[in-house]
Length: 531
Image (tube, rainbow, N blue to C red; front, side, top):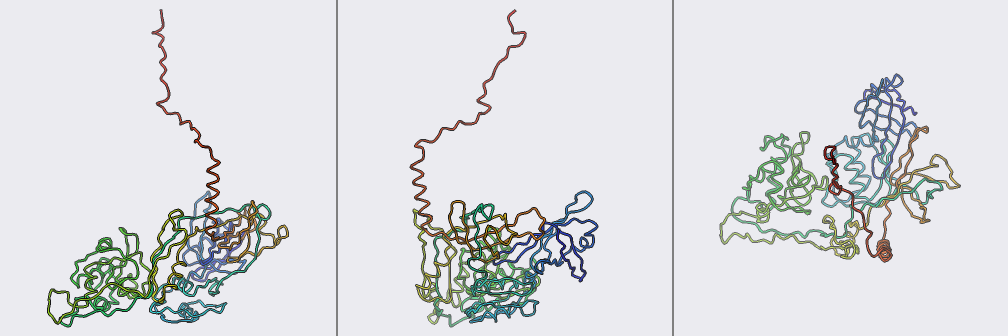
C-alpha cells in the first residue's frame, strides 16, 4: 500500500491508500501513473473527491498527475477503483496559443511563445542553434502540439519536472547499465514490427516562383486567378461556426468550402464525404483552392480550403469559428484538387470564351522546383523488400539536389521498429551480481541475451511499481535497434542453408476425421433374428 496525496479543484486535500501504484515514463511522451484503491472507510474522503481535474502526487518524486479516467467496479461491500492519471505537464493541451512566429527563431523565443500566459516555464539544458521556419509558422495550436513541433524543428528531446519543461539535444547518459539474461534479469524478449517499413520516397525542393499572366480586361472577382480565391475567402475570417450552416451568417467546415466554390461558379454542396470525391487526390505541396481533408477517404470528418502551399482556412469549431492557420500546424490526411477550380486558379483572369487580342490567357501552370528526385533504399530492390512508398517529401528551403537526396534518405524508414523488453528479478537492489545499473528514460547501455550476443540499446519506456509490497513486476522497454543490410543478408543466407537441410518431401499429415468418414453400422433388431 502507498498513501497518495489527492487534491480537488476546490483545493480540498486528503490521501488515498492505494495499491499497484505504477508509473510509466516514455521517451517523447507524458508520464502516466495508474493505481487502484478500495472505496472503504479509510478512503471515504478520497472516494468522494474522485472527479475531473483532481491532482494526485507521487510521494516518492513529488511529481503531480491529473486524473484522466476512473473505473469503479462493485465487489461485495465496497467498490474497487482503477484510476488512470497523466502528468500535470499535459495541461499544455488546455492552452490554445493563437500567436505565431515565422522565419529564423531561437529555441528560447519559441519557448516564450509556448509558455506565455500559462503556468509553465522552460529550461534549455544545452546550447541549441536557431531554426528557420521560413514562411511556415509556429503557433495557432494547442500547447502540446506546439511542444511537439518545437521538438521536431530543433531536433531536441524534453522531459518534465511538474510545470518546468526541460529541453536538451538528447536526454539520458551513455553506458549506464548492463543486463545479462538469467544473471541480473529474468528474461530478455524482442519484438520486431514490420508494419512501419518504407523503402522509397519522392520529394521536391523549394518551389520556383512563377509569374502568372493576367487578363487585362474584365472583373477578376470570380475568375480565381492571382490569388482571387484566397482573397475572397479571407474576408470571411471570424464568421461563426454553425453546424449544418452554409452562409456567411454561420457555417460548418463543409459549408464554408461549398460557399467559396459556388461563388466561383463550381457546384459544390455538403457534407465532406461528398466534397472529397469532387476531384483528384493530391499530396503536398497544396495549391490555392485545394480541399484538405482529415480522416480516411470515404469517412472524412473535416475539410479546409488551401489558400496557398503553406496556409489553410477553415470553419474550425464553435469556439474558434472561421480561422486561418498554417497547414503544418495540423496536417491533413490528403487533399483533393478540383479540375474546374485548378483551371480558375491557374487562369489568372476571366475564364470566359472571349478571344479578344488584348487578353493573354496563356500560362504554364506546371509547378517547377529548384530540385526534385526519388530515393530508393538498398532494401527497395526486387530481391529484397521491394518498393514500399513513404509519403512524399517537400521543402521550401532546399535548393540543391545533394541536400534533397540526403533529406529523402533520412525520411525513409527501411528497418523494422525493434524493441527489447526485460522483466527484472533484482530491480530494487542497488547492486546485482556486482553490476550497478542506472535506469532512466533515454539512458544507453547493453543487453546480453542467452546466446551471448551484446546489443547496445536505449531505454524507451520504464515502468515501475511504487508500493514495494506489490506482486507486480517492473519492466523496461529498450529500442530502437537499427539492423543494417548485413543483418538481413545473413538471415537470408541462414534461411537458404536451412532449406538445404530440410526434408525433400513434406511430411504426410493425417487429416482430421469427419462425420462422413464414420461408417454406418446396422444393428439387427430383436425381431430380425432367426427363429
